[in-house]
Image (cartoon, rainbow, N blue to C red; front, side, top):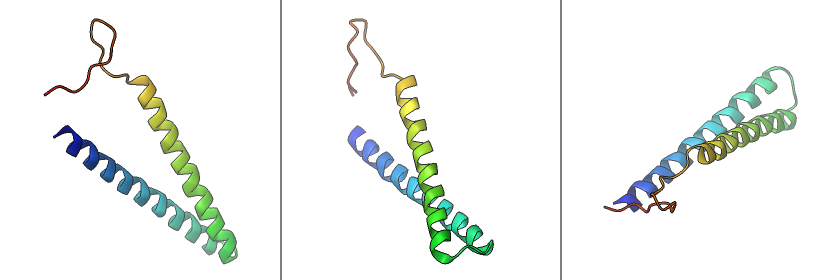
Length: 83
């Protein structure tokens, strides 16, 4: 059961991450295009903004994985999920 939950969480997380980056790229690209930038420059601006957001999300995830350690037993070893 834990494997199914983990797989579902990974799929949903990937879908949400992709949706956020695509939305950022589209909105920033359209804003640059409306400001009078050429199409290729606007596309580049949108992709740059999306990659910056993705890098920030990656850094936040790395920080959370470092700050929120796994559970430990009294012996110091990390516990495995036991049902």
